[in-house]
Image 1 (tube, one colour):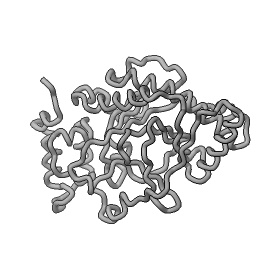
Image 2: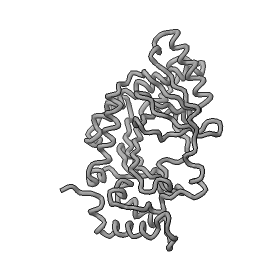
Image 3: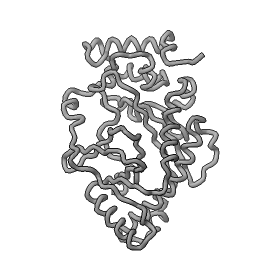
Image 4: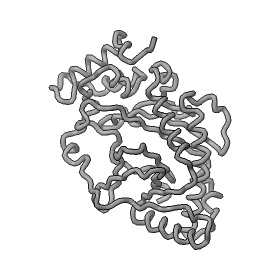
Length: 304
């Protein structure tokens, strides 16, 4: 029989969370609200936000509700401008590469973001990665719970919100992080079966694209093409795969808060047909519309 999150609410810790959620829903009156106890109760379910949705919850728990002053500004964006889209098809041609380097330089200095197309990764690989993560999150909760951890030493980590216990408001999303510590790591059996093949294949292609981007960025900085690669700036990487379950009160919650990426370089794959990413540009939030086959490149804090 299929096991779902809602089956567990008969057990004490799940009953406790559900009761607290009813008492402290975002629109209700604060009745002895204990944020830390609610966070702990939620985390102990090991079922993430998807578990809450599967339970049939109609009101979001208060830990996910954004402050009223933030609700007045979230989501306001402009569609009049778009982040740059850079075609990499001529990257091996001298004249074409020169143009690409100039485009990367301008986008990196002006935006810190750009999309790349014709990067050499097939849509089959990209779609396979999205589908694999979808399957992981939508499988039986007992299978997902095997990977639920906040132990940074684990190669595979599944949880809800990195900063669950430190942020002012919990993010309405679940995340699985898969580490690839080198160019050809072994022990792929450690990865979840639902996304093992797709994530390994995607990782191989991302490693190649990452090194191509390092070459372009090295040239942007006036360095030898292999300078950043020799510094091991892309040696090993992690896949941070976010899943955003349907929210019963989307006007009160948010999937990802305003932030900058602390690392060196981020390569972002978006689901097609879903415009959710926004970039802050000259004081305006700009929607990043997914481009078919495109990948968003984010210059991280370390590189900046």
